[in-house]
Image (cartoon, rainbow, N blue to C red; front, side, top):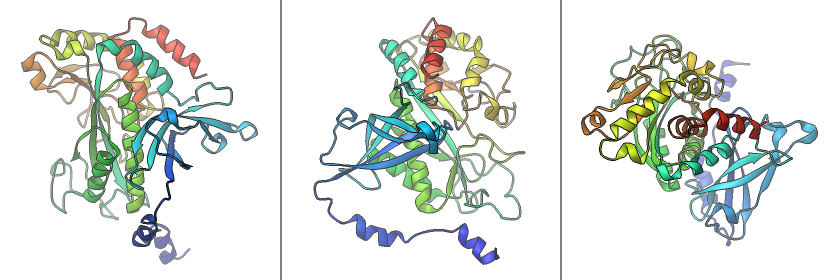
Length: 381
């Protein structure tokens, strides 16, 4: 392959101006619903569209659909049909209203949840603790890559200068890909997500957005849709969004999904005692959480949680006020107010938010964590 043809392979693109003409055509009372689900990797999202004769107002109005699970790592070709159950509805920022994004749970031919359908178990746990009103906020870090897998904006034959000037920076010599961040930010707002902010991260070409506060199951729903929107926006720009927890080895920050968590008791006066009690419970189940905080039972996080680059070591549990090198950080303002929330800094950037949020409520609220975990495992067999 010649160098010119190789270059064209990595710059495949279409003219978005031409597409715009067609997107202006009337829909003739039809609504496009894009069904979205988590594939067999536990990290990837898939999607396909269905035409409806009405604008749905809730997921319950939409039909159960099916897909080829043998092409998503979820079934054998000889018995490939899987089911999509709509569970959450959002506005579509690409096709615009009245078109919808439809988040779905995945089920097998025998109606059991697919192995990567952790929403089903999470929803049961969240229903049990609804009177505690658990709030979550998740800080999704990600890294932009060119289509050749090289960090976006980095010199092709070397590295940028060492970390220091890139975090929350401004300037063409410090940040790469802000257009993508802004497009994704606006897409999340249009979709109806509780996106609370964005910033450039410590490693160049690394960014973060925050979703929340969200109550209960809505946290996982919204973060998965925000991830879908990120990948879809990057598709338009011809760039890749990586959720790898350590995309560049060496003296570079990894990528996490820090999770902020509180219950009603923690947010009320003198809630600090409930925060401290929750942290004590978490300390006793540290490795159980580590195994749930990335899709590969802690192997991905082992590359990131080294005790360096603003992380605690994967085998150690620690907590502290304003300490970004601890497993659990209590924000300084919370320490002063004696109420609020805490930040679990252990979840990896590619974690499943359903598993993370469920683990937190199981450990800090439910007293039968092991029993609940066994039930979840049976549900996903």
